[in-house]
Image (cartoon, rainbow, N blue to C red):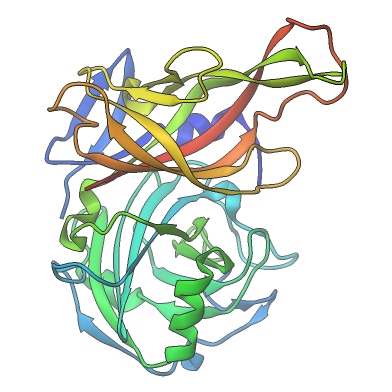
Length: 340
């Protein structure tokens, strides 16, 4: 995964609501109305679209999986830095692009709701099987749904008759990734690994959820002495500004309780559901349960869950230190806010 300040500017926020554009704290946040390989890479080799047997279009557009509970919901935050180039292969990695995608698996039906910004109209839309940093074969093909894309969004459902594949997707979503291709980047414009969502929301409202990326942020650490007399840095706080002017910090230093406060004073705190390692140089990705702590109306008033994805940097300094020393380590991440 690449690291750059450009990536933060590229993904200021992906907010889905009925408004066109909002500005908060001097930062413009894209607000979009609700509604990676060449598409033929398989472990760096070709995999023809003809190999996608057992799939048929169930719903072309306008309906994203129907209402009601049940099924497995997954999410992916896509960006160009996640793409994996193949030597001599087609162009990949739109550094200006970003997308937010939700997937629901229920029975033999796989529904998708995706919206994008900063990149051209998609030409292909797939789920591939492959871990982070690895190209894999296409397993679910949503490309036909793009024929009826609305604005910068598309929703719809396909049938997949491979029950074993869907079982793998539900059991190990991190072993699969979403990939959106464009004419300029036929090898893949933006990509993101899939993650389990624990909130069982009505999938027709999937695009009411939103993503906000870190514009400027640091993980704050304090040097503390252990019972055995050794010293090491431990987390004290976090200080970040996300797209849309959302402020992110701990409720108070050393509390271990993160909070997010929107400019409209709606706010939530978070408690960790799960952690996913993301390499030695990056803080882990997180799934957090959200609890309301601010106004009952506003941007965060409906938030039930938060995913911290695509983390870069932020790791505590290693080795011994002088007790009481406080340091801030820059980091990047995409935060996906899931509504109940």
